[in-house]
Image: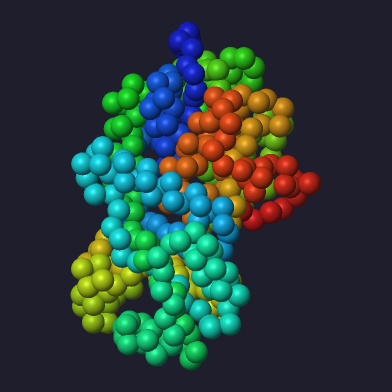
Length: 340
């Protein structure tokens, strides 16, 4: 029989991926009584936050992401300092594209506007600097020197420990079965029932399953991302110790998505490769104490410190630190198909 929980939380967060963990971390850091719920037993590999590494960068065509990343770097550094364990390694991020590529030009202009250290590499200089990269004729490079590797699984563990140390509660292996909107909002799980002043849903591919009973279905598409590991031709030459950077290919004719990769580290001798839109950060249109964070596939991990901060602010009815116009649900005039 389900036991009733009478304790009232300031906030309940559903989903203990990186976005949910950072949201709970910000709530706990501001002395909010927070419960973080995860349907699977931690750690697990069924969401989009598992694995050992992710790229971090300030190189974006959009000003708002580049601006947000400045604070993200500060929070990642603060978390690393608090934990006493390395969560980030600066390797640089090399963007590759044709000289006339409009996205490459836009990114270069964005980096310049925000004072981010970067270097343009014409074809010949690019070949000399990175002889172990096979380049297309006329391809040039743009090096975002702040780019690097985030140690993803380590970051999740550190955050979950920090949430507990700050007084937050983490329950894993507890699937949400029902959400009853209201004040308080009631969340029923496979184990118990909880009440909170606000609810934040960061459930990844399971977001719409939770939202449909609340009268909302977001235009989210779950993507399966292929992660490949390529054997080094020259052993050791693609490793972080040899200053081989993360890389991102723009506008390649062979792929509909950007192709990006990380230097050899997770598995010595093997280089990681995968493909790479805007998030949803908003309140439910009908229930303003239910906050939604979704659509993070591709580039959400590096921005999670700020995503978590924004979701905390929305849940506590605080003025958001950033303009949320690009992330509002209202940008979809009709909730038809969209690819986030």
